[in-house]
Amino acid sequence: MTNVGERQKQAARGTRWTVLACAGVVLGMGGLAAVSAPLYSMFCKATGFNGTPLVGAAPTAPTGEALAPVLVRFDTNVSKNLSWRFQPEQSRVDAVPGQTATVFFKVTNTGPAPSAGIAVFNVQPDLMGSYFVKVQCFCFDEHTLQPGETAEFPLVFYVDPALRKDPDIGDLSEMTLSYTYYPSKNGAPVAEAAKPAATRNF
Image (cartoon, rainbow, N blue to C red):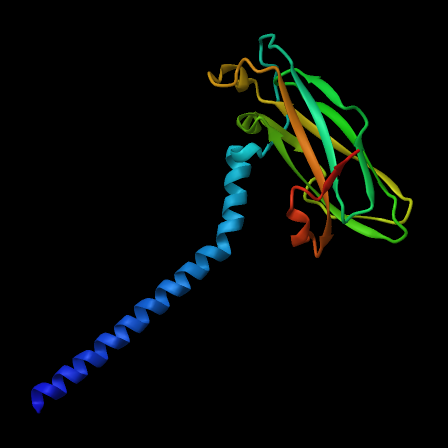
């Protein structure tokens, strides 16, 4: 009887440890899920992964050499759930690596009611995202426009001269910066606006 009792106690202790271990795994996975999106966003912004432009200060000194310019095209889109018109004041610019450039974007609320939007962006080809450095940008800021209201937002950027030393893409002459405005809710794009098909070009 003593052996049976001991076995039962050991089994009970084993069950408790198993339950605690499972709970720890579940809590750990939940914690990873909670921080994975912010960490992924930080990783993309720090490395230019998946065409995400970097954020930095303007270059402080000339590169000392004449580098071939990069033709930067601007693509603007608006979610079908947002009654806005969105376009750059110039569709392209020749950007000399290491020199800042400024481009203004105009947005107009064409709907009958006030609405808020947030712009997200990427650079194509993806590998060039790590060389596109934004000094000032309106992306990820929530903007609210009244019916018929128009606003202008500047983008200040430069192309990192290190691009020309990259053996994979150093000889490329063009890149495209693409912005999409989504309706926002509490400072973030609404979930249903994340579908690529839900955009239209102006």
